[in-house]
Amino acid sequence: MTSASPVVAYETLAIPKATGRAAIITLDRPAELNAMSWELIRAFDAAVSSADGDPDVRVVFITGRGRAFSAGGDLKSYLELQRDPVRFPAFVKDLHDAFGRLRTLRVPVVALINGVTVAGGLELLLSCDMAIAATSARIGDGHLNFGQMGGGGVLTLLARMVGIQRAAELVMTGKLLDAETAADWGLVGNVVPDARLLAEGMALARQIAVKSPLAVANAKEIMNTIWSEAMSVPSGLRLERERNAVYCLTSEDAPEGLLAFSDKRAPRFTGR
Image 1 (tube, rainbow, N blue to C red):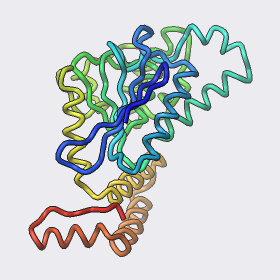
Image 2 (image 1 turned 90 degrees about the vertical axis):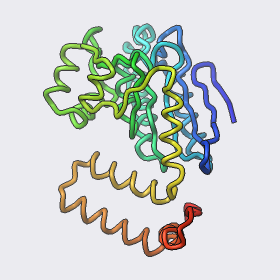
Image 3 (image 1 turned 135 degrees about the vertical axis):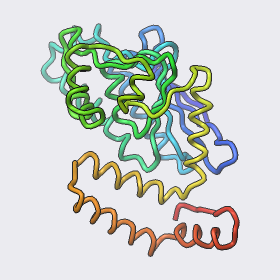
Image 4 (image 1 turned 120 degrees about the vertical axis):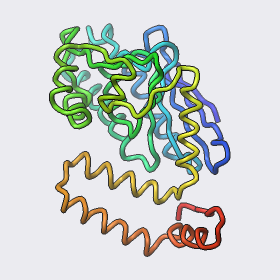
């Protein structure tokens, strides 16, 4: 399935040698380096809803058209928007809501980072579960370069990802990291040639899609809850233990996995 707004493209592709499909959400303002207008944020949120409502989707990819993942907010539109005390906070709330949904989706969300990834682009990256970077990727904050300050999550999430000193360095200097340094810092999990970015993403999708969709959803929810709420070890272990008991005792997929192991065959997971 393929659909598009003027600023965001949405398609699904079959995952080779696995059940299910990968949804690909592409920011599609290449001439503007995929700068985030209010129109784009709304279209992006609609595309996320399409992926979330499709039971065949096992992984969501987010990427950008052209030479940027996203250069951040549409600063030209801010000249007017930041003068409006009603509309500007509403825009930021819509951005928070759209990005915040990603870690609560039932499937993993993987950023495929191509080229420039700055400010709001970095905030979108931080909202994903995983990231693969092309060698062309250049990643940083950049809000302060133009008299702005982070408002879409970078000031909350970046330090949790890379530590407070490295986060402060990125925010205060506006420097850009190359792909290998971003991987060193833990912002992305892997670096691949530009031409291999989608192929490597699909290889990752296949590894995920052969698992129980219900087990994947549970694992994602528990990990993100513990991380985002900075839970103590005892609290995290209790939450993990409780969800594990419910899943193992009530799902169809848990005993199916054990039977498949015993029978030396591939499991037939249903997500129930």
